[in-house]
Length: 579
Image 1 (spheres, one colour):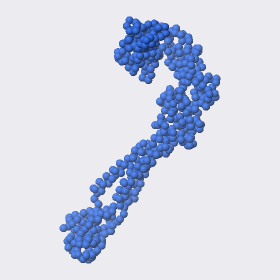
Image 2 (cartoon, rainbow, N blue to C red):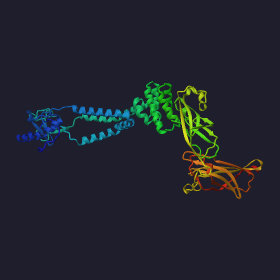
Image 3 (cartoon, one colour):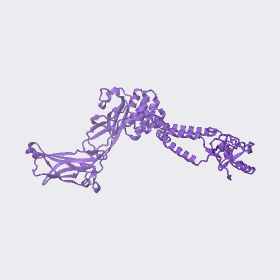
Image 4 (cartoon, rainbow, N blue to C red):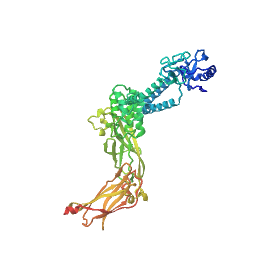
């Protein structure tokens, strides 16, 4: 039975087992006209029909239509349009990946890893789905039902018997039709590409990691401009970029302009991070700066700017103590420079000397106590009336090559003995001084219960010892600890109570901040004549007295009530010595 609609499979010639009548042939021609666009698409116009003037007769089975003469095209078809599209896509992809490798190596490695693993897997899945949903014609070949010999090369109008076995081909079941799919070389090539893509991708990833990454060897493929302008600001506190720059500097691949540009990046970072001076070594930049100085690749203006950022832009007078009128003298402290100059690679040492101290613009006599490194201190012996003053310190400064200071104490070298300097200048630093009247309370007392050391536990006694002293006397030793519970400064008179005996142990003050603790000391001693052998415990009483801490300018208040530490065990080492 003839189907009403011919399938879209590709058709090959064969020998019919039923020859069509004129009526059937007319119907067949109408079906061919409907199917022609599909046949031309998949077979490329290789099938002939009566419409084209070919003397061909069409034969059919229950499922396919077959011409008696046909032509096939073999191989993979690839149009110029497709070639150009692929070429443009590959070029764009290569350009984007190349830019990522220079600007964003981390993203480049991630994309390369993704292209090597996930993308081939997804493409394989898409290919399987595409093959499953796509309809593609296939050839059908007529063969003899008896001997299985092929019949498609025979003339159907002359062939009624099989040339191989002689079987009658006019029988309805004498001719069989076999579907031949054929080799799809394009799909084979595509599968091979998907198979080797992960291998090639992983290999490319290893190669890329050798040139792009967080270590000096992986920065060799990066241009110097990219290294200084893009990589260095992001990793300025890490060794990798600095080591690569040092390698290029040693190899003579860096100009003075490029070295200056790298140093300027460091200067900007230092000024932003610590504008008052660098109070730590330049661990990662040390070797690069040493090499640059030895090669004389840092210009003087850039080197001096780096020194200013390292040592600090100017000297600083530490906050002056608060004093009362008539009080004899006060201390002046100046800080300038850094203790880490030997671990900086600068090759230049900062020398400075205090030349004069002014009080409200008038010179005063100040005795130098000591000068060591970045610190200087002096003492003014005079007394002042109550009021506000300004203390100004004049300083002579210079930058000197460290190589010229061999054998000299640079920390205490007077200006007249300085070697030849690279740069000299004068600086001034000022600080306010306030002198209070004798009767005013300088430091107020606080009674905020949230900061009460009696409840927060900011102070504790670690040991309270009694030792035998000369002449049968006793020595009391009180050792204290200041804990994190102390949230307010203390300034106290300390007293020990033994039953009916009270002993004044002295005074104590402490200022505890988040990063440091300053105090008069954690141990108090007192010599007494006698102490009853039965004494085993004592109460320690701390009574507020702001006069002990009022000279500290950073203290704005102290705890204003008594602190009582009860039943503190007393270690009677004096009794052991007697026995």
